[in-house]
Image 1 (cartoon, rainbow, N blue to C red):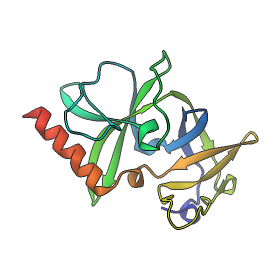
Image 2: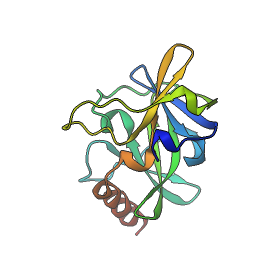
Image 3: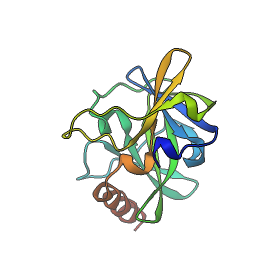
Image 4: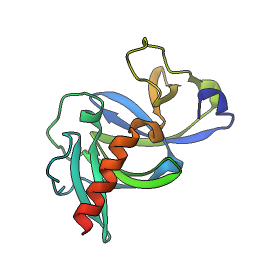
Length: 165
């Protein structure tokens, strides 16, 4: 989906990473969990923190700071996991996104969303749906389905099946 395809008011869940505010369409959010123990799975990339048990289901957890090449941070009382459902190659996958803090849910009109900036050809920005303007600050609206590559999602699926076995 591109900014031009956003033609109606949508609700977004905002969260912080290193002081920056990001947003996800609430349609993609299943729930928000307090930070709890994450079981590390060997031989996975650093940004894949491990898995959690969510009511009997194995849910991979990704550290969004590390995914976006930000420095790691010690966990705080505000650190939480946003459980999202992403779709890639017409397949739904549930995963947890570890973030610094969750802010709020708010509505944003299409007129308050600008296209993602072009930063040259070497930097990938296709996962940024747009830049929302809210109370004199920008909110980076993510297309969560495009944040992870198909190879990374294959790894997530393998991680789930290895732990579940």
